[in-house]
Image 1 (tube, rainbow, N blue to C red):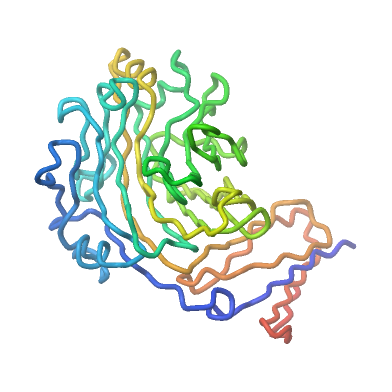
Image 2 (image 1 turned 120 degrees about the vertical axis):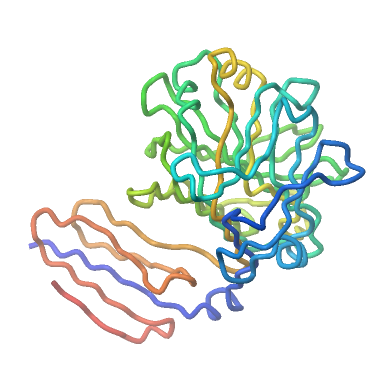
Length: 368
């Protein structure tokens, strides 16, 4: 008889992270939340202002989000073009007209002299960069993007999120970024996948890849809302971490990236946190934008339910292997009241769940 033993180690949040996790801001883009232009910045930037009364505080886009020292300034960046070429809008959810969402679309390449399409939300220039960032957001890829599975455009970079530990546009000698991309792998119905890269980015080592983590197991769904979880921890080859999980509506949670490795430039002697990042973004090539338009489609994505935390992490561990002796260490999610362990038991074998606390004291043993 085989026995599957699961060891669940419970840590207090203060013990694990050094301080209590803090909700900085959340919003579902509901009424009283509006997009407006930013004076003196032409039409290349916009802002989201207002209070989202559909959620409890902190829910003010200016007085909560931008007043936090880890955040800096929020804006929506287009880089170029006009409102007939690209736009960010708060609009009705394509699946539920009573729900408001944020919509990014690009019809014509608007950036870098017409070679790229860009609409992105920026959190730039904080005075105290994140060393541990956790946030969640919901993402919806509309039916138009199904064309990417079969079209002629090369879909190797369709950036949805980007994180800079020192940016490459202000002369810093140690720029490093992590980017989350939509990528096509083959020409089949399930060919769209997420890929995450950590890169140095300077004139001398342009986009030198430090690590690359393309996911081949999770097929990104079309016409389905999905919750994205991101955890960035500043660190070196052994202490850095970038984590991404996806939960489609009606589906199970899948970890698509969990990299231990540098999350800052390996030569940087004094990394100072994540000061510039785009938690939601549409940034891709003119080839992708033009191919979609020529097929009568549009490069566009929808976002909803943005929530950002400091000094937090996420961990719900799924055990899907065949039964065998196994020990799993799980760190609780600080804003969920439970940790879920999922595993199959096709042969109705015996399983033991042992819980101990951070002082290695037995809490409880459960056997089915």
